Image (tube, rainbow, N blue to C red; front, side, top):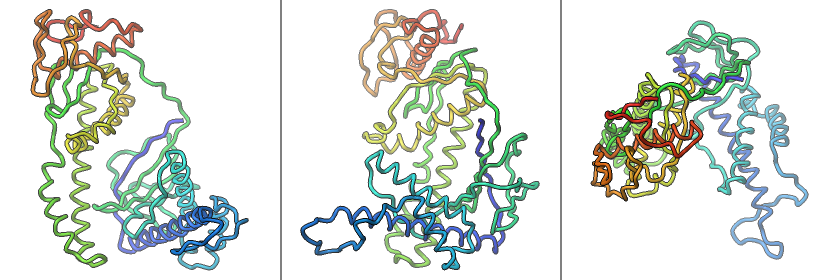
Length: 400
């Protein structure tokens, strides 16, 4: 089964915007009520049996069952008969909110985290239509239950032979968007190793250094707009909570943050396609980016968003039939790519690799990318010891 997710921008009318906001309000009410019900049941089982709390007490019968998804879905059916706000909303949309809450509680138990958060009118930003009887897309219009025929900007063609499974309407700072999930009953095999190998080393001095001796500077997405964002957030603390001025200023801050996010993602996609041109295999380091986000350079690491870049790169490689793999990250900057000798640990200000054995000299990041490429090729060939001379010529180009 092949699944594709496409995002398009919606161009709703004023009446349709009102309907979308009604859906978001109803979803928020269902989420908050169901979350409060589950939290009260859990907290009622934590009280002491020999005394009552001086702060609060939950009056819930001891034999009351846990409010699971099935029980809350049945209660939702009864609530829709009484509450007119819920009756006007598609029932499947509200059921998906309960399913999302159920998944959040399952993840909370598995990862040992706290309870999910209550949502105010700004935090509930999306809702899902889980199925469609017929194809709702006609040219650049889509028919959504309860909302009507909404115009959307087709930035790409709808894939042929795919069936629309679900649609998620999203409210962002720059407007309303829709995520369409298409599926086709085909099996696409993963790419196999072939063609020219390419090693990629990431860093803060250069965003990417490739084994083709290409050094790409790191665009500072957040730093370019940091001053504007800081001034807006400084003004925010003087605004009264719940006021109209605070809401307008929050929208400005959200638009700046979305600009940073969109610019970063656009750069990652374009660079990924560029790296796939003319190469059949791409190898990167297997790095724990959560640890990178907690060190002294965390601001710059999070701004570069290397984890997102690797995810996008792996997806683009799969689409373009390029083999993608991660290799061991240890000592990539301490091994000579020409002779394989361990040259020792380098300081951060040492940007040139010089081998004391063979005299090979090059840029430090370029040398690390060669080591990454050699390790990947060695793993593909089934012998990790093959790491050096066979695969490099004088200018660092592959001869595989």
